[in-house]
Image 1 (cartoon, rainbow, N blue to C red):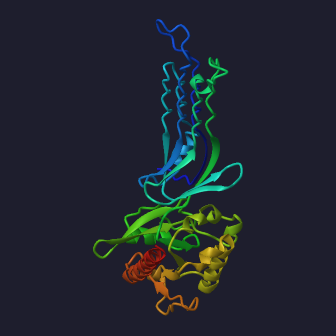
Image 2: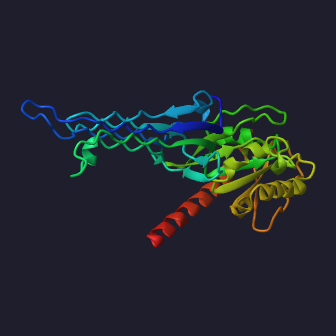
Image 3: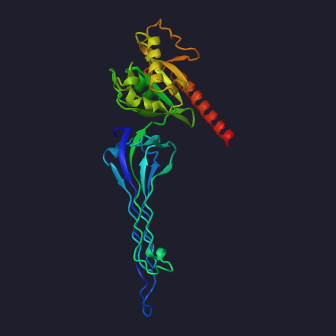
Length: 337
């Protein structure tokens, strides 16, 4: 399936039905009073998360979503039927903005989360509501109100526990294919990965975490060079960043500093996330290779996705960090509750 992580759509809630002008007409009641019914409410438009969706591809083909209008009121004080609501399914992690103002309307991250995005118009009142002692036979009713209309910009930010970040050809795709069931395209040239990939990493019995591999970033990615800017937002929600550098890099320390600089330029909060360094392609490293010290408090883990060297240690470390963050978040929620 093609990966699409941004889309623009128009949503239009239904108009309310018109109120009815009608008078009671029965045998032996020549001058019956007003009995026009109210119009029904127009249909609402809802957004709803669907955990089975992983892309905004559908919105590239359908751009406009219209809810039904309310049915007009009828005689005998009969209220018209409400217009049917419509529900638009989006992936978890979808950020919704008002296209005209740029205001964030919703950040939909939970499963089966619903939000009312456009309200249907209220039905108009029938002439029965406008009778007074002075005006006993009103020959008018209210029209239904217009439903709300909005143009929405949607951005998808993947929901993952661990985000893999590194230069092109750093071995991110090979790593995620080695520790999960993900099958990204792999080749020995830069920018093999053109879209983000998600993989579920199984850990021991009944434990797992989600890993995201994004296209490689290069110096200047935060200003739009390469593919980095387009996909860096997909690691904003991750709990941990794994910074990958190949053992055959001309300057491992300089590459590490460049990655940190680009992350900080894109969004300073990325530098506040826990991170680990991963030295990849250890199967081609020379015998005298020594893992350099890259940053205080950040231990680099050497791995080879080809031979499997270091993968267990890496999964141990990632699971420890992920579970620690989850426990901390749960404790904080319980404290606030």
